[in-house]
Image 1 (cartoon, rainbow, N blue to C red):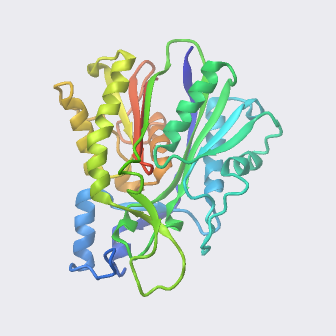
Image 2 (image 1 turned 45 degrees about the vertical axis):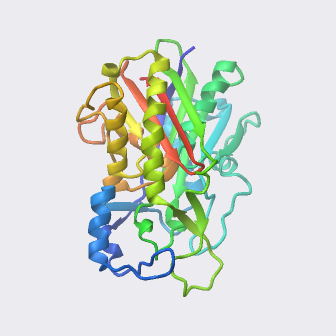
Image 3 (image 1 turned 90 degrees about the horizontal axis):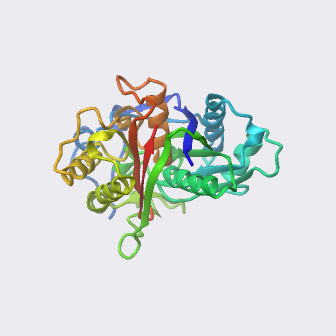
Amino acid sequence: MGVIIKGTGSYIPEGIARNDAFENHRFFNEDGTRFDYENHVIIEKFKAITGIAERRYIKDSLTTSDIASFAAIKAIEDAGIDKEELDYIIVAHNYGDVKHDSVQSDTVPSIASRVKHNLKIKNSACVAYDMLFGCPGWVESVIQANAYIKSGIAKKCLIIGAEALSRVVDQHDRDSMIYSDGAGAAVVVHEDGGSGILSHKSATFTYDEAHFIYFGESNNQELTDARRYIKMYGRKIYEFALNNVPSAMKDCLDDAGIDIKELKKIFIHQANEKMDDAIVKRFYKMYGATPPADVMPMTIDKLGNSSVATVPTLYDLVRRKELGTHRVSKGDIVIFASVGAGMNINAIVYRV
């Protein structure tokens, strides 16, 4: 049974925040001490490591559920299906709807329920729920949809990854420059014909790794509010990803019985350009090979890290021929892979 991505859509926010927008920020270390470097030096080093030159922020009037709905509408139109035929709507996110200037996340009702409401779907048998799985949430939701469809309990699923990280960043933490907003969606269905999901892998590491990404106080200890922000131990995550993601990708490819030479594209979570490049090189090295120059499309330079939205947004842009010369064609073998809070990793081998 072929479980395929029938249609895709994405929402790229209009607000652009370039690196020079951070030149007047006051950056502090975790212990509250000021950085030894001037901001322009911090920004230059940040760009060299992450590859990020700019990121996207949503308008003050919008929330995560809004942009999730925008991407969903495009995916449904692209798939050419009736929205009332959807069996499941799964929305991957991590922080809910955080309204502009609010200190509290709103997750009741679920983001998925809000999306279903926004889409004006009347069918009560269309089940809507959220996926909290860190940055790999969209990939994991596709894996769940694959199981639902193969088991026969669903025929059509709408899978969305959406996040507004600009609402949960600490402006006094240099890591705030990493995060971005965005949404990507896909309609996943059963369709015979040889295309579809060939294999998948998922794992959760918690013994030492559970709190590599967490919610914490501002690095500016002069602040007295109780607000919490997204925080991470960057070096630990970098090492964790390099030690675990390539092997998960290899296991997935081997389970699918696919030769590395057949792999056309790797759609990997846009977390850090240098990290992603190292992951892919290590993955190919396991086969005694070198990655082709065009195997890994990247959007992090212009779109930043929008968590669960990076992989579906990246795939949508390539499908629509809106990312340079990158293309996917019928029959191509691709990998979706991600790593993030939990710590979770996953991968899918997919025949377009």
